[in-house]
Image (cartoon, rainbow over all chains, first blue to last red; front, side):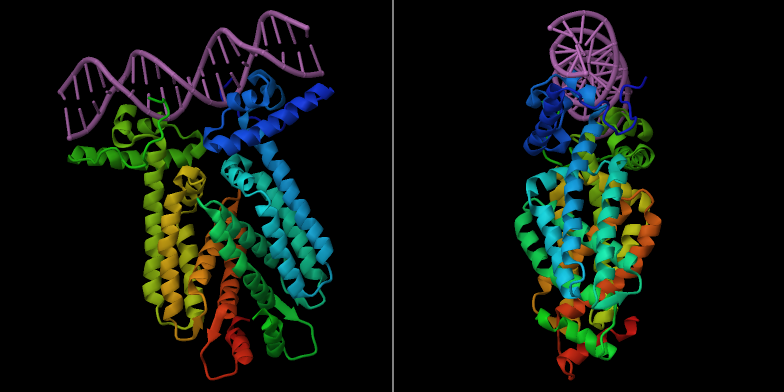
Length: 228
Length: 228
DNA sequence: ACCTGAACACCGTTCAAGT
DNA sequence: ACCTGAACACCGTTCAAGT
């Protein structure tokens, strides 16, 4: 048997007694604390166990290897973000395109910057390529929510809502990530937050086939007017 | 002295004899090969040394620690990308805004997808947060090139070219990264490549204060017309 | 059912010895 | 000036023994 087993990323066993539930909980919070204190590259199973107040052996009873632990943590985090976006989606359904656009941007920024330190730490974790299918899953949920939103608005129809939703997610997710990964994210984040609403609006308008009474080219510019 | 020294990320010593230059070169190509074969998470100094045909000790004569090696490798790669963008910048200077926009997008896509496998492997490397000032430096060069470009065009002036250039880089860089990190990047990349030109154009037009003879709102829609 | 911690293999890094 | 490889500390993971 190999020393560094790869195996599945699933938890090894589910805690049944109350004591065990508390243990797993302690391991999770311990992991976050270690992550925040020393960063992903210095994160050690021993350190996590010590911080959680259990022995390494206990940790390995619930997680087959370190990556599975980080995977589970990332999963929780992405779950929260996907839910935020889905809630935003139902709240914004049937609204005008500009409202939808601004709502998407602010929901995304809020979700990602609620706890900047944790987001940053988890970006480093997610670099592990074995973990990428997870990111893919979360992305798909978010993308589906965005797509529903685009087809719900009465302002416009989109030729390829899937492509637009996909691009929107990649652009929002990627740009915010690239900013949060900087050493001092705050000023850059402020800059980006100021620009993204305009970027998102103009992209959506450029992608829409408007269904108003006005002629096409005039509608396009009318849509933009309250931006300035 | 700590076992896992952090220290500066600089190379430890510069090779003086021809033999030594060849050694360092072999270490670099060995690193890329190992990276492509087993990925960043399994990359080992011993493995790299073996692949390069030298002993570990030799490796550590030129690089104070593993991170310094990866840092140097990433540096070379980013250097190439920054140069590509700077060349594109001089080539596109003074051109109409639409030409500039399309040129930026295609230069970026070309630079990042020239060797997708290497780009992917290096994304995983760059997750190490200690390395982020490097990414910051490369970004600044690219951002400066974009900013020059925006102020060079006679089609339009920008109220805050710095903010626009910054956003452009974050959006292009982030979205392409998020796509290349997927398990099978090709189809997603095709999708994104189809959308980014329109996104970039519409964002630039929405950010520009046009200086033509026509009235503002008409100019805005005219700019978009050859997109459809 | 859950927990412990010594034990083992492997990895990063060093350094005395070689050309 | 450059290279080697055994040696050392530390990390991931296991497993026999405990409650």
